[in-house]
Amino acid sequence: MGTVVGAVGAVVAGKVALNAERSTLTAWTNSTSILTGCLFVAVCAYEAAVFLIGEATTRGDRRLARYFRRRAAIAGIAAGALSLADLIVLRSSDSMLYDRLTQRALPLIVVAGACGIVVVALLVAGRARGLRVLSATGVAAVVWGWGVAQYPTLLPGTGLTLSDGSAPHATLVAIVAVTILAVALVVPGFLLLFFLQGRRLLESDATPTAPE
Image 1 (cartoon, rainbow, N blue to C red):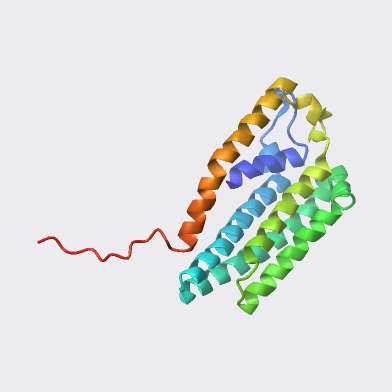
Image 2: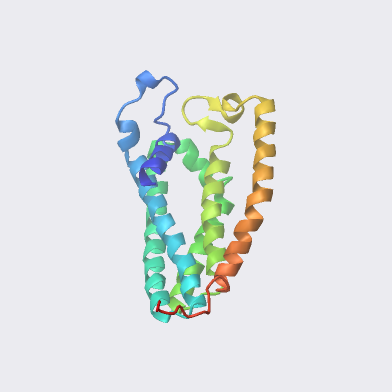
């Protein structure tokens, strides 16, 4: 996961050239790529711990809930520190993206920071209500903030825009239609499974008997 997102960091830093012959190892090992990879690993650990707090609380396992609460707080603080470090590094590696992040994408960055602070405060206070929604909102704000800041450029430093690098209109329409159909067919089943699992309705009350 960190390696994949490190590639995103290389794109963000404008180190990926349109001509593959010009690409070098430093495109994937620069500070922006490494920090972005570490950031998303921390974010994934943070989100996983937050969601497992709810699961442990639902099952009445206080010990496990405390365990994941500590892990979520540590991962959340680490993600916040890494995001600030990544922003500082971007100031020198991609000043245009940095300016857009601190200008037109600033409201989303503020939302992400506020959600992170509130989640950490709730974790320290030992409260679980609202953690999932707040953590997911914060992470979504970070992703959308990056998109808003980079739009319409697809590869920074190359002049390749989103419209230039997109598929033909007919292909995009087909992809959207298939995606909508997939969501309509799959999401209700996942929501039902999540609800049943959360309510512990899938567990059998029958006690297995030993074979005679």
